[in-house]
Length: 411
Image (cartoon, rainbow, N blue to C red; front, side, top):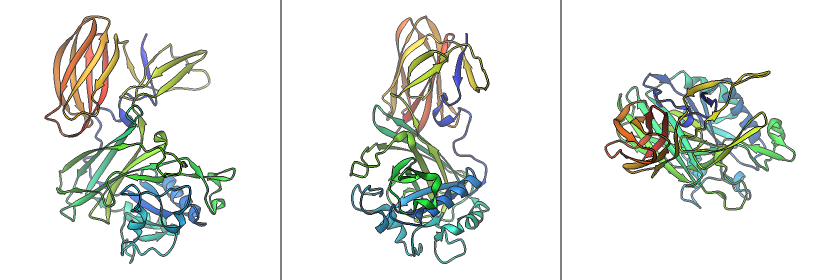
């Protein structure tokens, strides 16, 4: 009997495999970052949402949309605005008051906060398509990758960002901005008939709504911006359920998207990336196979295994990996995140000789040592004090099975 790991229950966070680079080392062109200024009482804003969504569908993987509710069109309840200090400084308002933005009305969006040959960075939604071609045809000196995990036990979203400079930036100091968006927020919206696909009854489906900035108004400094530079940052965000403070439009981590972009300064975004937030542990899934249902508790790798004889009728499923049965159970890795050292505990049904490895998210083997596994409870200490902050995978391989757990190192 084999253990089948089904598509969508990946052994590694966000589908990143051990040999895969989070930020490519190959020179790439820029992606488009649209920061759209919008509001629930703006009658034409759904038309702007529609134009941005259509562009994203036309250029998959190249468009990052950040719908920021701000200004007079965002007042009242529900409160969809984003604040950089928790209550008063409105992110979108500060952004559109930059002199070069030149905002004259809603909806408008900056596209990579660049002039693109014009005199202002704010663009009409009718120009999104043509202006995007200018951006995607330009080479970027930096590539970005981002992944994020929601830990429901700690009520935190943990984000890992990696950037790699394939060329030299025009400025000695760059800015890394990281934040969270949310899909599927049902609520009021003026002019919703301009985007009928998002209308459900009397409510509008707000997607890509900007919910939080993890790096303040203008981002964090990157002080080495020359070719070959690698940047790795880890962020934690304590989930605020009632983020608007009015009991409406609560955060749903499973519906959230993390974004990251690098700019030359406050403006001129060079590249960006995004990823859906995945659930790390504590959640309970049900896998139903014919008349059998198995309750399985998620763990920090966001992976679950089910044992059954695969059979398809009138359809197909995809197998992404196959493992022999393991005799390990009760697996815990703590603390997670850690500042240096962590402890892996588990129970084994048999005596075994195991190999312990720590692997970086980019596939580099950081640690490799042997460790005896005994029947009953086992404890393995993992020293990561010499590593840089980031995502790692702790892997224990024995003759009877493999344990793989995600570990976040934050110094």
